[in-house]
Amino acid sequence: MRGSLLFRMIAVLSVTLLIGTASGLVLSLAPAPNTAPNDTLTIMTYNIYQGYTPDGLVNLERIRDTIRDSGADIVGLQESDSGRVGSMNIDSILWLSTQLEMYSYFGPPTSEQVIGVALLSKYPITSADYHILSHEELPRVLLETVVRIGTFGLNVFVVHLGLSYADRTTQAAEVMTIVNAASGSKILMGDFNTLPTGEPEPGVGSPDDTIYHDISMYLNDTWTAAGNPLNPVDGYTWPSTDPYERIDYIWVSPNISVLSCAVVSSATGSDHLPVWARIELP
Image 1 (cartoon, rainbow, N blue to C red):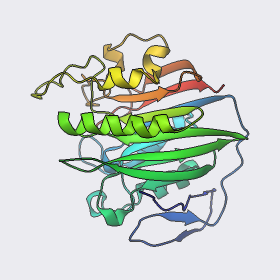
Image 2 (cartoon, rainbow, N blue to C red):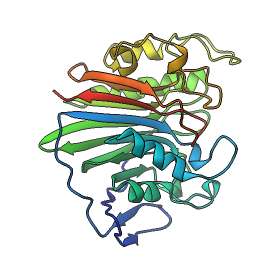
Image 3 (cartoon, rainbow, N blue to C red):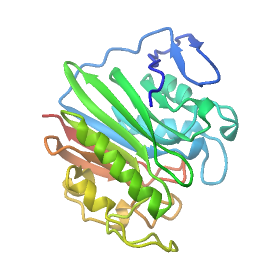
Image 4 (tube, rainbow, N blue to C red):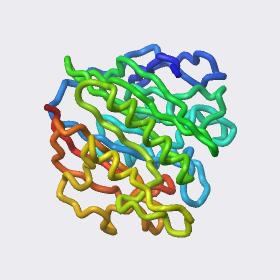
């Protein structure tokens, strides 16, 4: 399915024009500052819990500061919102993109009543699409975008997989079909709700899943590619107050070098901890 291609181009003190409040998608009147192309990038994935902190407060400032302090060039957001009642009618994507001076894309539109995913980027987003994945429980979304870094087109995918074993397994297969159909360098990131060991999550009665293994047939997990063990305590991302699961990942195509990868253990803006990876483009 195709989302609106109204990319936000944000600058400090820009005056923004709201285009269709039902969709929650906004276009700024002023372009973002030019960012010189670089061979190395910092990528982040962050489930922002619709802007709520673990203690139930809306505090986008914490999320903004975490992203800004990381120096991230491209950020994939899950449980992100653009003006729904559940997030106090706050357009978190507009606010973050304005504060961080980044381009952004959100999908699906608010009118579809689906918890969406979003992309923030210091570089222009030249095309974008969203796919609502097969589901028996809550609808889940994959963003498919291309970010232009100089003359280089980077395929960036952002996803939030379902909680049930059946939904998650079906959705992961659909995601990889879409990702594998894209040519060129790729990044896939998000909340996968799956453990790297393939074991069921604690308290969840489901078989072992093969999602981590299946994705790793095509893409590299930046966490292990950076030299980290598969499932150590300092790699856990949920829950943020006392993490015991690694379920948030950044994957890259084999032609992308991974320089480092870490979890921001000090982040307090969500029930998830963000993951960042420093990569080198081919």
